[in-house]
Length: 223
Image (cartoon, rainbow, N blue to C red; front, side, top):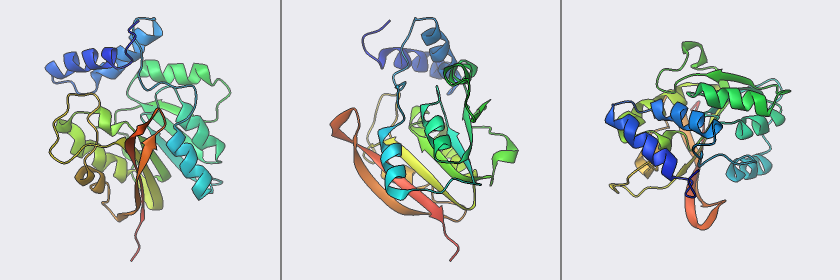
């Protein structure tokens, strides 16, 4: 297993992109990690600290409302959102990741599903009161970025909200991913279909206080 948590993801992503397959590397990474042959760099034993801090500050009311967690991986964020009272759906393009989440949380109330953000189920559009997108879009290359962003925003129900957490890239900055962090213009592009940005923050990364991440909230604008 690599000592560098990013090496395995970078290698598999490069191989997949050379085949014009922007999402196929996720399954290979999770499958190899399940066999002890790779490391999933974003797998942690706790939910994203910026998500937890947001929930503690905002105190969202989840009872009777639906939430969607995008690119759920092994389920830590999804379980946290469900613990807030939301009826939670969480998905990942990797069947191995979804199976791992179900095994990790066998008593979970979360509805874990295998789905592709680039082609999500049509019944998910306009369906969720809260959508949480944490570092998933940034793991997808720029060639599919716009489609991924539109689909994330499209799953927010009328009157609902969206939380986006992502690393920061300067406008025009070239990066060798993954990840391919979000520029401010890309972050702003989540504000479609009636959504508007209500708070955009640059927050210290939980694993590196000297680095910053976007934390952005989008709510429905009925004006």
